[in-house]
Length: 60
Image (tube, rainbow, N blue to C red):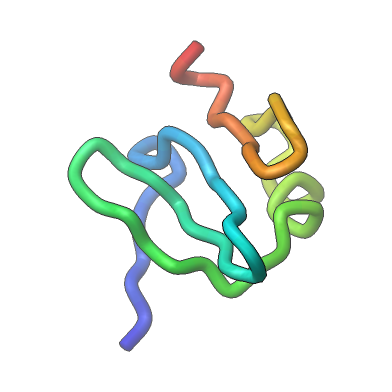
């Protein structure tokens, strides 16, 4: 089942092993994109802060 959430709900994306997850205040969701793909798609809203973590800049 696919879940759709608003970018405004996402605090950050994180990779662990080969799994990418998005973190909100309440949940963690698996993502079917690579971090570099998310950075390209959402470039105005994300910033890579470390190799495994991309932060939603609206939460800085």
